[in-house]
Every structure is written in C-alpha cells, then in structure tokens.
Length: 510
Image (cartoon, rainbow, N blue to C red):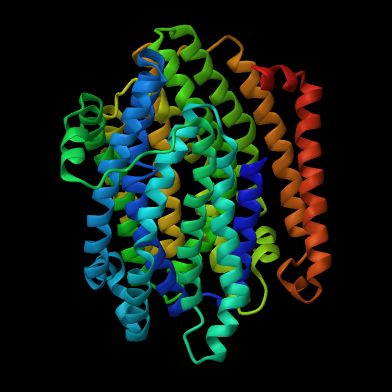
C-alpha cells in the first residue's frame, strides 16, 4: 500500500512538473542534473551497496546473532559515511565535467548547460542522504520492517511537489530561474527520507554509531564482514555500472536529438516506474532477505518456491500492465501530463517513448525478482557478465533503432535488452538447479495470456473510440473516463482469470 502511495505521489509530482515546465532545454537541464546524483546513488546505494550489504547482513543475523550484527552495521556505516563525504566533495567540484559527460548536447543551449552545472552542484549531496537511506532500509528490511523504507520515497515526491507548486512561482517573482526550485525540493526530500529512518532504527536498537576518528575507520576496515561486503561490491559495482553506462549513453544520445528529447524520455520513464516499482521493486525487496536467509539455512526447496511465487506474480501482474502501455499509451500520457505547458506534440513524443519501454516491461520487472536469486547466493559475477553482454546488444540496437524512431528508439532498445537479460537470468538459475519451476506453469501461463489478449482488445477499442488529446479543455471528464476504463480493464482481466479457473487467493497466500 505504501509503495502504491509512493507511485501515486510520484505521478502527481511528474504531472505538476510537466504542466509547469513542459519539455524544453531547461527541463532537459534539470533532468540531466537530477540524473547525475541518481546515477551515483544507484551505483553506491540501491545498487552495488545494497546487493552486497543485505545478503551479508542477513547471513550475520542468522549465524552470529543481533549483537555482533549491530557491530557490523556500525562499522559499515562508518566506512560508508567517509566514502560519501569524499564522493560529494569531488562531485561538486567536478560538476561541469560530469554534465558534459552525461549530456554534452546541452551545449546547443549554453544557458541550459550552465543551468545543469549549477543544479548538479546543488543536488549532488543528495547521494549522501540516499546512500545512508539505503543502509537504513537494508537493516529495516532484514528485520522485516518494510513500512518505513516503502514510505520514504513519498517524502521526496511531496518535497518536489511543494517546490514546483510553491517554490517555482516564488523564484519567478524574485527573478530567479523557476526550475531551480526543483533542485531545492530534491535536497529537502533527501534530508526528510533520512530523518524518518532514525526513529524506526532507534526502536530496534540498531541506529548506527558513526565514528569519525581514524582508529575506528581502520578497525572497521579490518572486520572480515566489511571486507566481504567490499569484495562483493566490486562485481556488483560493475553490474550496476553497466545499467548506468547504458543510461549515460542514452542521455548523451538524447541530448543531441531534438530539444526536449531528454524530458520526453524522462516523463515516459517516470510513468514506467509505476508498474516497475509496484511489482518488481516491491517483490524484490520482500524476497531478497528471505532468499538470503533460506540460502544461509540451506533450505533449497524454500529458496526455489519463493522464486517460483515471485515469477508467477510477475507474469500475472506485469503482462497486463505491458499490454496497457502498448495499446493505451496515448490516453495515459494525455490524462496524466497534458496540462499547462505540456503540448500536443509533447503527448505524442512521450507516448512513443512509453510504448518503447512498455515492450520490455515484463523483462524489467522480472529482473527485480531473478537477480536477487543470484545475489542471495552471494553470486554477483553471473548477473554482471549477463549485463555486460546485454549492454553491448542494447547499443547495437540503438544504432539500428535511433535513426528510425529517434528518442523512442532508445526506449525500445532498453525494453528489448531487458527481455534478453531476464530470460538469460532465468535460464541461469534453472541450469544451476537453484530454481525448479513448480507444476502447473503451462496452464497458468495460458490463462494469463488469454486474459491479457482480451484486455488488449478492450483497451485498443477504448483508445480509438475517443480523441483523448482533444479532451484537454474538459480535463475532469478525461480523468473520469480514464478511471472508468482502468477500473473496467481490471475487472475484465481478473474476471477472465476467475472464469478460466485461476485461484488468485491461493496464489497470493503462497
């Protein structure tokens, strides 16, 4: 439920940003500036660090007890804080170089490039807050306290909503570039997300004690467990870097296309995050500690059963979402974004990008379940090797698709790459015997495919029966129509599953 609230507030945030700023060189500048600390956050926080930290933490809790595990948390927090202070200082100083490396095409508009550098410097410390949030979330999730980590993204969304709604007009009235208010919202959101973790950790007696003397740093580094985390982080860093290198290349290419291309991709990506986070991230967060605990206990049957359950939930929920993005993209984009400065052309361009991402939604979500199957075994090298090859395939696809589809080709290449990645991970888990599909997959898949086909026919009719873009003037009517279509779609899909004999309650209980 909290993940749903997070996604809803995230959509409200993007709707407000789109209607206030539209898609222009300045919105491209903000999106590039915001991607830079997010890139490092995904490298050091939710990416390599979490993948290495959570399995070691879960194993320590299962084998060594809470007292020794608390000492491990203190030492990891100390080392992470020192690393973050150094990283933030370097990032602020190197902002012009980072912006040029991410999107040199912004120099088509010199003011846009300068704005991106300015906002990067202001927002780069965001990585520090979010990395410590990742550490806190890893601890809370391992202790099966999922509510606070799931709720924290809401605070970033609310801070950015306030920045766009209140801060932007204030900046404009005082002669300051309005989009700069979003940078302040990002920083406020980062601070709030970290602050809300503190009471939850205090209640568990697990608030890290961060040491700033050199002797404590040396002692932390000498701990075999922290060395193991660092050792696991190296291949994980490479694996996450592959995804971020792909993002870097795509942003660089988009910055050289029509101004607004970075923003169109960003708006489509934000809409994609709704099903990706609701399904993949939520399931992955729940599965990761339990998979690690099952592996530490040597319970292979439970390990395989959890993966099987996760994959069935992915197919059950991600496939109809992919169908909706491919057949109903224009109504979704028009209803969510088509206000204020967001033009008819912006709707069209964002729609094509969203359809490209939608083609690979099933893969994007499945990866969130399949990759933890390797990480829980402390095997990060295999997903890395797969990711490197998929990166090369994605860039070859860019060469073929971008000249034809422009920015939408970048989204489609990512979607196809995600499908290849997910299939490869699945075959790897099956080959090593870690995952053995439970009986009944054939009939289950047939039922889901039949219900999804019926859904596709209905949504295609609903998209073609109205001119959703022309309904801008009667936006409340458009919102009501969208809500009615989506509710009818959900009812149609689940009724079709029920009629086919699928017992949803038993599946959820598993």
